[in-house]
Length: 118
Image (cartoon, rainbow, N blue to C red; front, side):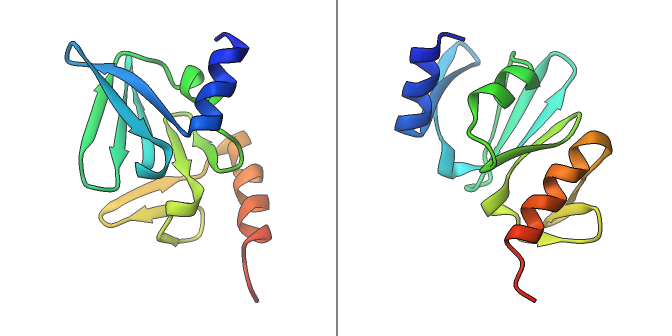
């Protein structure tokens, strides 16, 4: 991705994504988490909507600012400030449980430690 485009997206805190032959504006603040599914991603938004797009997780992971957004699993990127509850090694969004796995676990643990009051 062009570095000018990337810096513009990060600065403006939104991007447009193709879904069902439309361009849909996605504000960073509206994202709860992103789910990777084979050849596409599903972006879960705070208003309950889900946006599906033919895009891969790697591209979105490069696009979104870290550590605000962290890849926590091969198939998930979380908006860390939107996590309502952490239960052991997973984030819980209502009925949805998202595991922290493998090489991603350390970054998540570091983030959580830096935001935990004892």
